[in-house]
Length: 443
Ligand SMILES: O=C(O)C1=C[C@@H](OP(=O)(O)O)[C@@H](O)[C@H](O)C1
Ligand SMILES: C=C(OP(=O)(O)O)C(=O)O
Image (cartoon, rainbow, N blue to C red; front, side, top):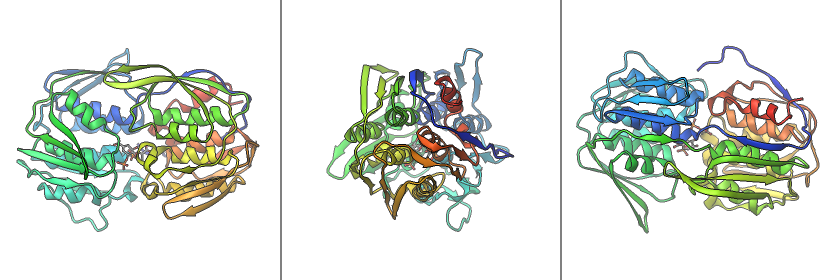
């Protein structure tokens, strides 16, 4: 969704943050809920769906391909699907806005249907690499319009029946894995993805939950995930847990603002997503997990975070996939730690909504924090808990996570920090500033 005018916003230091808050539904699970429900025959119901722009882009695209998707007044989303193999050719280009997940996963769905679709997106998405899905989906028989560099806009012509493949992921990406598995849903025979490094497993859990014939086998090469195609999906009632990637902002806020004591309820605790909690705890963060339970097949818990002195760490590279979206806010935590935190092995950060290494080095640097960029990560030298200087205007670069991370940094800065454009927050967390206000932090 294009935002015609930038929405600048200035954030000042906050007094002790205290209270109990919730975070919106998980973005990854929300996208997949809509896609799989749209492929099941019958009525699915989704509670707690993230109503952020990225997920709304998925909803519009699934409607354009034939699914009936409505939001009831009580906030429950009701979907009547078309059946696997039943997607219709969209009449106009599919506008994916800012959402890499929508784009790559939907390319997978189109790849094995006898339809053609054109994908377009905003300026940020149009710079992101699509070659990573073009390559395996081409092996399955899909055709892509000639696209030097593999960027949007991109036209995909699917093939039905498509060709099953066995594919080892060259990059640790849940989006690439999911694109192939979704293409495999409508492909005869067995489609296999080998994942040398485990990434978020929501697609596997949800495909199995919808009744697809899917197996996951650990092996020395990595996780071997096989889906038997031409499946029939059964409609489901889904409850989406709170997004741990959104909770991460409050975990860092609670850690760096003196006197803070926050409880975030109903946070998804899928182990493929909780790297940020492990990293913050290694730094000395005071985070406790309460009332661990299972909701809709996913582990959830309430998280309590209290202000605590943080110490620098070397972030273990094996945590990277389970905290890939949380590095910007981890760099903020590092800015308040004692010592120099070093994160390496995270080169994927350079191809997100912005180059998140350079974006955060520039943003924190402008606020007086010493940062050193590496090709695959960053070193950040912290204040030992004292306020950062702040007093800068930050380029948010159509990147929601840069905007929210620097908002959190502003909560313990001597001078206010201005975001040149806060609108991107709506892609994953439309009520982010409402929650800050509720906590009394938007004086
Ligand atoms: O599959 C998903 O839902 C996602 C996978 C990750 O991307 P990559 O697969 O590119 O690592 C993540 O950054 C994104 O926010 C959501
Ligand atoms: C990288 C992200 O999302 P996407 O790839 O879906 O745009 C994100 O939410 O941080």
